[in-house]
Image (cartoon, rainbow, N blue to C red; front, side, top):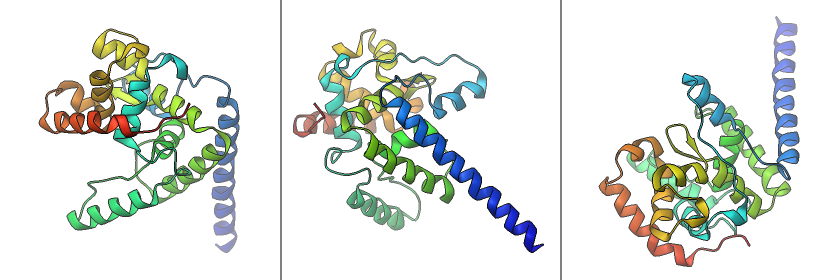
Length: 224
């Protein structure tokens, strides 16, 4: 029995090491290559085999408006942290404890990107640990500009809609390079629940958050 437990532990450790090697090699490759697909995209596709809407766009081919809007909506301290916003995490924990349920996340853009690239949306201690390691590696290996560029190109904006270019085409029939402030703010705020807001674009909560994002966009800093 003892030998069986030891073998099982060795197998689990080996699997975890292999996962980290896969993540490391992927991050090395993606430093200079477009990210054509993510784990989230693959899970979405294999759920119903419906084609994914996604077109990669380089950083300079995306409007600064959406960069400012996403930072304002998702991670105001993006340029100042190294992957983890500890104040934001503490605030989220306090809010969750007060409500006795999960009402806030506190994840940074880097953490969200690590989850989108390599994992899936099921909560577990092991997944969160792997996500933290992936986030740390990403922050050390990529520039902030690269992190934001890949994030904008891989995040979900609606049912089978991934990346800001596909979202711009779907919602506004225009390129991501041409997004104005209002359009950028809308896309940024739907990230919290893209499939719901895709069908409920006049939801009061969405409109309120959009006003806040428009207000704070001018104060955000983005990578150059």
